Length: 252
Image (cartoon, rainbow, N blue to C red; front, side, top):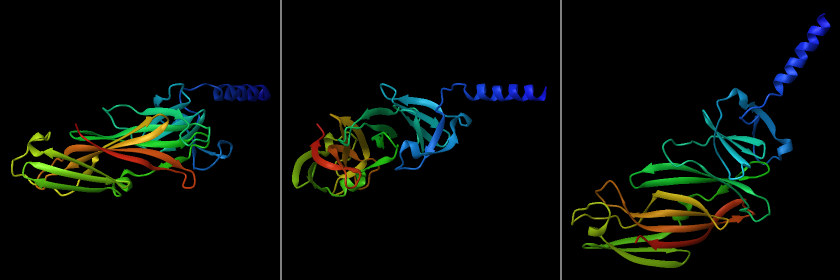
C-alpha cells in the first residue's frame, strides 16, 4: 500500500511540474555567457511578472516585475533593472541585425521622461544569443564634443553649432520663441541639451535626435531651437554603438 501511495504522489508531482504558464519559466543572470552556460537564478512563476510588450513576431517578450523587467528572447530570459513609466507610450521592441554580423539583436526603446518641453527615451540593445547588453554611447558624451555659441543682438539670437568639423549657423528672434519672454530678457551664451532625447530605428540603424535649446539667464524653462541628428555605428573593437554621423538642423 505504501509503495502504491508513493507512486501516486510521484506521478502527481510530475504532472504538476508540466503545467503551462503565460510567464517565462526562469530568469538568467550575467552577461557574456552562451544560453547553454547561463545559470538559472530565479523562478518567474514565483514573481508578479506581467507581459507588457513583444516584438512583431514575438521573438522578444518584455515582462515587468516589481523591481525591473525580464527580457525573453526565443525562450532565454534575463532580468534587468530598467524602469517602466506609466501613462506614456509603451515600449517599442524590434528584432534586427544592427551589428552587421548576420545575427539579430533585440532593440528595446523605453520612455524615460515626458512633460512640458520634456520628451526623452533610452535605447537598450541586447545580443540575441546570450542577452548581454551592448553599450550605446551616452548622449552627454556626444554633445560634449559639440561647439555651440549663442550671441544676442537685441531681439535676435545668432546661433552657431559645430559638429565633426562642420559649422551650422542660424538665427532666432526672441519674440518668435515658443515661450513668452520680456523684450529685455538675456540668454546664456551656449546651447542647452537634455530635455529632448529620442532614440529610433531607421533603415536598420540606431539613431537619436537631441533637442538644442536657448536658455534665459533668469528664466526657468529653455526654448527649443534646433535638433542634433545622430546616426550610430557599431564599433566591433569596443563592442559599442558610437556616434558616426552628426547633423544640426534649426527648428522651423
